[in-house]
Amino acid sequence: MHTQLYIDGQWVDGIGKLPVYDPSDGSVIAEVALAGDAQCDAAISAADAAAKAWAKTAPRYRSEILRKAFELMTAENEVIAQLISRENGKAMPDARGEATYAAEFFRWFAEETVRTPGDFRKSPSGDKRILVSHEPIGLSILITPWNFPAGMATRKIGPAVAAGCTMVLKPAGETPLTAMYIVDLMERAGLPKGVLNLVLPEKTGPAISKMLHDPRVKNLSFTGSTEVGRILLKEAADRVIRCSMELGGNAQVVI
Image (cartoon, rainbow, N blue to C red; front, top):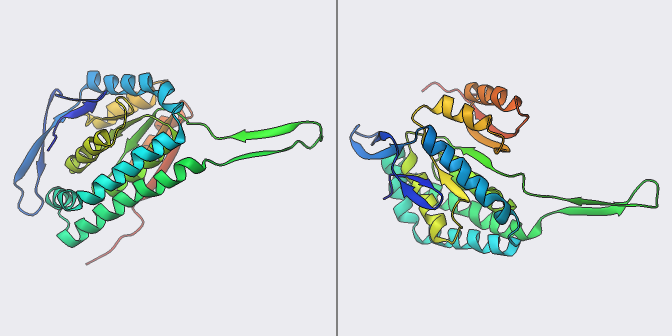
């Protein structure tokens, strides 16, 4: 089980440790590395360095990586489910369901990678042609929540790989182990170094703000609270970064 940061194809130490707790009894199940400014910048640099070559790869090549990742997740369903259950607290049937659900994102995007849409038509004047081609947006920051540590990671990694974008993944501090396992799985599936990086900043707010103000960053994908989403939208607006968000806070319940 990896507990380090993943930067440029290497598992590296950070500047400190963050305990990960078993929610059933409060015991510490692991300590994971925390990233400082240097590690966060190194992750951005690695993703930026890999971006041009990765964007030029054939869709079929990226599709095969995602297909292999799906096969690995399916074969290792029980291991992933146990990890989800330990750090997230889900009952094993639910954890197995999430592991299966998470793997399906890789299968879906493996199939969609080779079907990139486009358009070609006559211009209104009739003497020209209009070509619409979809291109990778570029380096993306992926921020995932604690409640679906596998499902939300693959839901963001899958389309980024399919489109030819490089990534820096920031999982929730409560449930980083599942994300680290998936990153290792992507490496085993053949993902080139630098394409996917993982950091867990010591000071999350300032670190994400700095990333969003970095001119190399082109996109933000966030799943989490509406409150944090508002903050991130304001930060991203300074450079007019494209944002994709799934925000919570609208399903209150009293038990």
